[in-house]
Length: 230
Image (tube, rainbow, N blue to C red; front, side):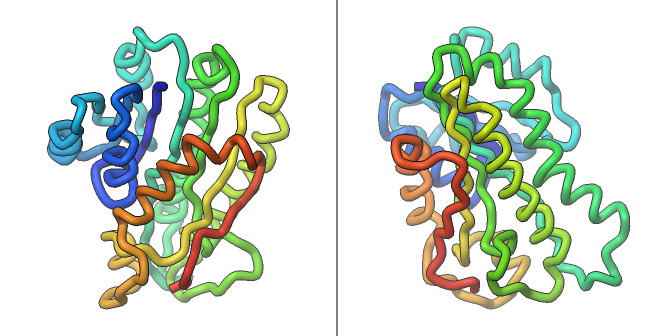
């Protein structure tokens, strides 16, 4: 099984990749901007089944990515985990802030999906898993300083529903996990000093399970995975 995961150099992405790598039949391609941490991730794989590529969703090196996976006949799972958060009051958010957040959290994801669609649909049965946030769920608790981040995740949730409809003819499932508080560096940026009830490695186990098994039960769903928010 061939898996691509973005934002794999830290936090939930790192732990999800390691969890998936426990299965020697999985080939995982880890993407992130941090070359050093990607190398550390690959070295930690128990079966040497994690390869990596430095990849910036806002400035994608598409040719290098396609070359990296040229021997793959298909992509079975795509986990869109990379995200950008800036904790700023609404009036202090610049146009540049809004653009850069949406570039990573939405536009970069749409470009990556378009690029990979031929391989995702190559044999059918693929799963696209978007990592959302409770902040992007209508009716959930909202927090000052996170308007741009939450808006981008709301857009990602809606995109999930739309793509599930468009891609079902190719037997591609698309789901979104709306995460609550998980102890990661990103959470520390949003809520300094807060201790989350769920550790990154615990969530990594859950995401790895859902990425491989969730398509049997869900399609086009935005599923809250949250004990607290925060």
